[in-house]
Length: 149
Figure: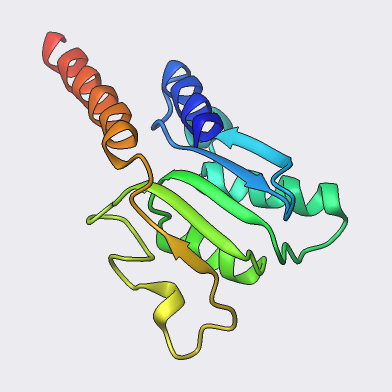
C-alpha cells in the first residue's frame, strides 16, 4: 500500500484525483505502478487500476494475471472492478471504501454478480484512514481554490 499511496500523492501533485495502484506478482514483486492520469491524458479510462493492469499484462506477456494482486488506494469503480475480473487478478486489495463510485463493495458489486466470470479475493479497508485522508485533503484544496476565484 505504501507504493500505491506514493503514486496517489504524485497524482495529486499533477492535479489528478489521488488514486494510486500497484500490481504484484505471486512472489510479491512489483509488476507495475501508477497513479490516475485521467486529466493529463484526456482519457476517462486512465484510472490507476487500468494503467497498472495493462502494464502488468504487457510485462508478463499475458492478459491473464492469475496469482497477481492489485493494490489500490480506493475501492475500484465498476469499470476497474470489471477489468480486474477480465484480467483474472487473484486478489484485489484496496484502502478507502467508495460508497458513491465503488464497484466492489458498493454500487453494482461486480464480483458478486451471478454472471461474473472470475471472482478475485477481495480485501478492503487496508489503511483506510490514511488513504481516505489523501482523498479528503485533495478535494478540500480543490474546493478552496474554487471559492478563491
